[in-house]
Image (cartoon, rainbow, N blue to C red; front, top):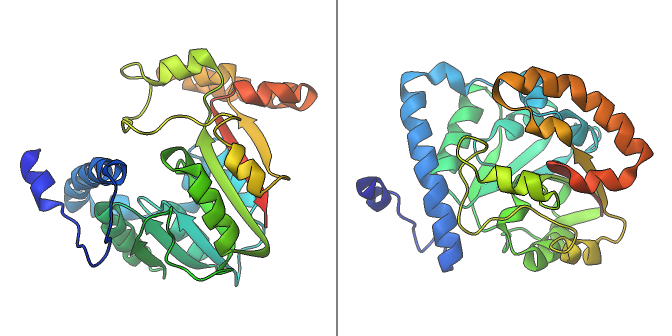
Length: 266
């Protein structure tokens, strides 16, 4: 572990200033990427992306992507692109894709995945809170599980700055207003590994984004079905359509869900 940490360093010329929080985030995700790189070295076929499988891997992904509209000929920023799967899907839709991440290891994986899938995308090592792009650079912005890692006051201003007038941004994020789900999220075997600095979003923590985009929408996904993990996952899929109908009748239930899709119009 310590050897890998020494190997994963950052060039001051690329990222001149990293706060302690950013350094912790970058180190955590670089170590994840290093483990993944070892797997891909033995299983390069795993880098291939099947669009339908990516869009269906969580119930909220396909509906959230649909909210971006027709991507052909449009510029899109994949904010916190990570492994680059979404970037590949967007490129196949005809978009001009730029992906940024704080993790050099994940940028390397995203570049390799784009090459293996024969698509073009521009991946850059960058800080999402200080985007290296001109004003009004993008027609669309996509983010999957990224906002809850960030300072949303800074991030909201950057989204406003780089999103073109009339552009769209969609973010899929873990939600933190259901106390039971929040506790379960941190139990062993119930969820993914987490950094020390991240926390699920709430209406309070989303206030800076709401201030920049008063018409922002929040759509909830997985309520009772969120408890159906492992062998009960199939039951959860059957329950979820019933939850969706109930949430349309009782909109406040979306604030008790596991995940939310956040929609923004520039």
